[in-house]
Image 1 (tube, rainbow, N blue to C red):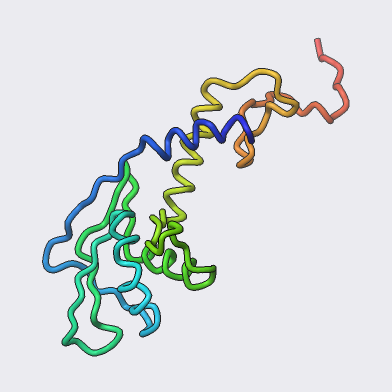
Image 2: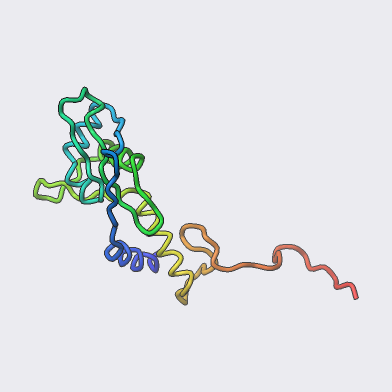
Length: 159
């Protein structure tokens, strides 16, 4: 686990999220009224994560927000479901701030999973020595393949 932390943090610091503007005015965000207010309050944190929201104040509640850009990393695109997940995590936890009253960046959970998978793959490609259990990573991905069932009794060779 400790061996994966260093590559994970390096990937988190060095992996840029590309931002893709959405055509046609973006996608509607179908959020409950309280989630809509939360999204407007945390718009800077969402923007830092690569999501841009357009607020249409004349629209009725629950129809005021549109997603006008979404982030992506390599072949993984983050979208409306990720915005909803981020808002749900903010709503469920204490309000995250940077210590000076400003909202911190809220990376989508899928981004953390993608980075963890990349760090795991990098560690598997160059396995660190001295591990007590080198055959699986902390995510459960096997790093060795066994060709025989070592727990089965040996069978005599037929010759």
